[in-house]
Image (tube, rainbow, N blue to C red; front, side):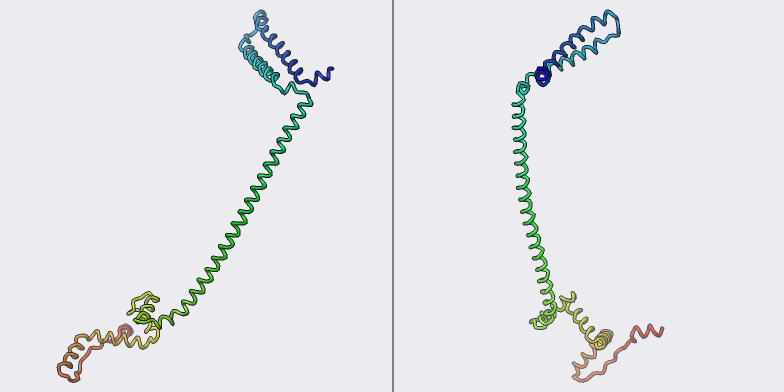
Length: 229
């Protein structure tokens, strides 16, 4: 019988509430006894302690009013089993949802990897095509430029050299025959320095219809003058 009472939660809370009530009555009687013996004034401390005991008593009343204290051990075991089953079901559902989410992410990652691989393959293919097209264009550009009509070939050459056609033509002649280009430059410089005399001689030849002898001034090359100095 004593073991049944010791294992009954309701009886245990009843005993605790009785002890709290006895302790509260003892504390309430302390001020009168203390006043008779004239010790230090503990009224405020005792009031705080009494308030705390009241709160404890209210908490015990709330606990005693709980339906769980009226359940038998069998009923408590069944409730625990039901709660455990609910937790297991919830955990299983969460695990299933996590597995489904992981499968979706795996499928998505596989798709992204496939797209990245296909895009990389396309980029490499375009790079090869561009390189081949550039090489073919470089090889065929001289041939195509040679057969272009209406002076487009010279324009193409000047465009490739990033110069106007006059400058590009001079650069091409100098590269093809440096000595011949030097003579052309020297003759052009000589004619330019004697422009007035040559124009007058040409006019006299036209008027007389005969060959005219002209006097021109030839200046020494600048490099030879510099060497003598």
